[in-house]
Image (cartoon, rainbow, N blue to C red):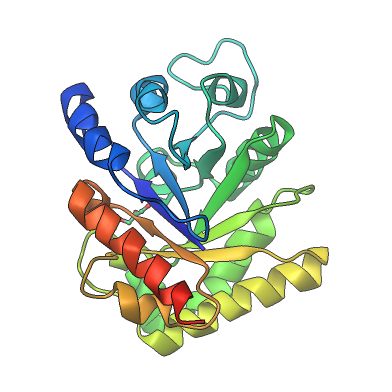
Length: 245
Ligand code: 13P
């Protein structure tokens, strides 16, 4: 089980310091892996504050080239060098605001994997596709075009665009169908099993329902991960969920 915090472009040095104080007094479980994706500029800083804790740190994106004339971009090697274990690739905010295409996302994912980072590859449909009933087809196409050629431990994050930051989440059946579809599709194409996280308006109220859904292997949390108490309460819900079995 994986509980991840995508802080996006939030939390400065002072707030990260405060956040880390709570993390340092919390008892983490070996059953649930926690990972934080801070803003790139604070990867090193966060790592230095939580280096004794069983929490992974990751980058929110990386470039497909390892070095060169790419102003403003971050090399996967630099993420690795600053202690990142994971990287998010293809978040819908990057697809929409930075015009990242499936082709480019595939290159970024492969380059990250080749640099020994574990990739969290994001997919998810728009409201229009959701309402048309074509979400499965849309996500299948995203996967077809953006799955890296070689991978071992890929994580997929299913994040419906219409659910991010809106407080709306798909029905239990829709999440279950989508996660099952993603796993089946990737297995048929590559003979490999992947874990699928759910992301989009995850919070303290809905976490138990989400964790109870078959084929949900964890969550990628945005807004609710900015508050350390909420983040740790969601983490604890995941531990409790596993304790039931
Ligand atoms: P919210 O939890 O704020 O909806 O964000 C989800 C997300 O985009 C995580 O990557």
